[in-house]
Amino acid sequence: MPDRSRVVRRPARSRAQSQRSMKVSVIMPAFNAERYLEAAAASVIAQTLGDWELVIVDDGSSDGTPEIADGLARRDTRVRVLHQDNRGVSSARNAGLRASSPSAPYVLFFDADDLLKPECLEVLAGTLDAHPEAVAACGFALRVESDGSWTEQIEGVRWGISRGRLVRWPDEAPITLAVLAVSNPLLPGFVLIRRDSIRTEEPFDPDVPYGEDWLFWLRLSRSGALVSVPRILLGYRRHGQNASVRADVACWRRHAWAQMRSLPGLTPEEERLVRLGEKFGARHDFYANLYRTRAALRQGRVQEAWRAFVRALRHRHGIGGGRPGERS
Image (tube, rainbow, N blue to C red):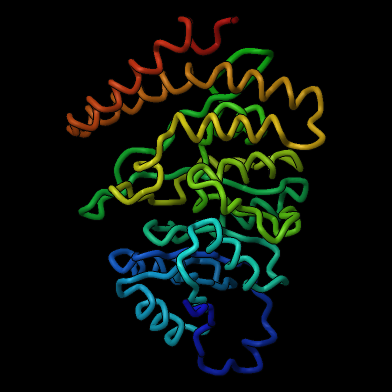
């Protein structure tokens, strides 16, 4: 099969456009995303921070995604499109990173079915400007329903390890390994990353089918903290094609912990956090699913609430009693 990798032609840039340096590279993998791609790209174009580039990676789509993406590039010179054979979301993100401008100091990996709040890039870039020690800045997300309405908060409660206990993590507290060793509360679309903190050309492992972003955050957190901005900056669409919906969550969590344990050069403190994170994982999932049950009931989504409640009961068998914050 011939390699489909190519970059779409764009109108020639003016001298002013060519000399202007971009502040943010937005990397958007897109596979059969014709239903959402226009809206996702429009949310980037509407950003109050205008110094961005958007690299759309068409990952071998068989629907209208390639044509939509090429049309976006023709209409806005800040948009580029890379076409490749289907290799998965990790490969698409890595390819987009390689194709992006190395002079842009910040990088955002943004899924083609999500939506950015207009102020997202400006808020996160300003936060990183103010915190040069941080490797990234992150916000929060609301769920986007099929009718386009924004409803409850995604991962509204964060948990982390403090003094050997599982505790609720304040919204404004930086995200560190103490949080990420327990679970992944982050979505790529609300995490702006300092480019020079990405130490490899392939930060996402193509051999990991689910949870590849979690492993990336874990590695990233070993270089520094992710500053948390307690603001809604992303709209997350949840539908049947989401990887998180289709995944065997317990399976990829076990894989993630195995990957954590095998990271080279772990310090004694990092090893301790990984052990505790795995220990507290089932307890976290139990209470997280109870939270999702309550949120779904408030929205009248009875079937979804029932599924979350059943998942909570399954995890209840593995936690040995006790509530977050109790000594174990």
